[in-house]
Image (cartoon, rainbow, N blue to C red):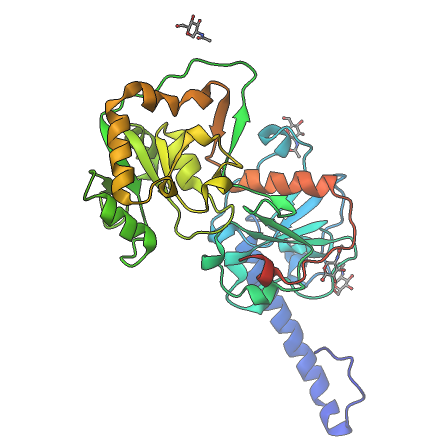
Length: 358
Ligand SMILES: *[C@@H]1O[C@H](CO)[C@@H](O)[C@H](O)[C@H]1NC(C)=O
Ligand SMILES: *[C@@H]1O[C@H](CO)[C@@H](O)[C@H](O)[C@H]1NC(C)=O
Ligand SMILES: *[C@@H]1O[C@H](CO)[C@@H](O)[C@H](O)[C@H]1NC(C)=O
Ligand SMILES: *[C@@H]1O[C@H](CO)[C@@H](O)[C@H](O)[C@H]1NC(C)=O
């Protein structure tokens, strides 16, 4: 690829300076585009334009993490992990000039799955760990094969990831508290953005709604701005936390944020009940598999609606536990920061990622 090949025959010799000039020009232009898109304004001086010759010196005593792309192209404020999570800080940056000095490179799958060329390339320092990061389900994760034998650590919602980044969790309270249930004037809500007529969850919903009224929000339905989610949904007794696809541990903000943070009782559709029970007390949710038919589920919800004491039982766990669910990217990166600090650098590669992430 570069000029290190065998001696070229003489007719080509004259081309060499010209080609070299082209290569330099190309590199400068590419570096300009790349840095311009990724760095903070003013973060790259004229030297940044000369390829990697200006790679920053590692002066931070803390671990340096390079975020290869802003997830889904959206910038966010990188926060201080000691403030966010009470863990020692890392230096976290999206400036690709750190590629040779960073201790870890976090690569967000959806942003690099179009082509292998979107992945970081080239030789890596022996201490550097590349982290495969993904919060989408396998059904919505294309081109996993590109990632085989490329990464050192995994970072996902799967509990067997090296860096476990679930969509939410329950925190234990230091003291029990009295549970107050918000005023409930409505019955069942569902927020759905990706509406597919043929999907199992839509089919199930269609059966359910012939036995019990369900208010549907989202694109193609009643619009519900994100900042109105909690205040609107908390008026409902039940929330349909139906995942878009069924995979082990794939339990998303539909449960943690839409349902639990708005104090509704989740009716879940996703992995089996046993999988949910790894993360939640058994009496905190209703699983559609608890009933042989949609009609059975509907009857049960109507029964609970008429029986405030039994309905209240679905809130008892909140005496001791508090759901955490509205997580931003900054928190996920701090989780990576924590694990990378704790895990010594050993040789480790993720072989067949595409076989594991199913
Ligand atoms: C630039 O990249 C080359 C090849 O990857 C590497 O050998 C060299 O150390 C890098 N230079 C700096 C200053 O990082
Ligand atoms: C993080 O916040 C703490 C507490 O405010 C402060 O002492 C520390 O310098 C901050 N670290 C970084 C890297 O900003
Ligand atoms: C909880 O409610 C009980 C009974 O109403 C009351 O005696 C107690 O002080 C309350 N506890 C807290 C922490 O508010
Ligand atoms: C990371 O994985 C790559 C690809 O398998 C490997 O070449 C490299 O040595 C690994 N680095 C570490 C620190 O494990």
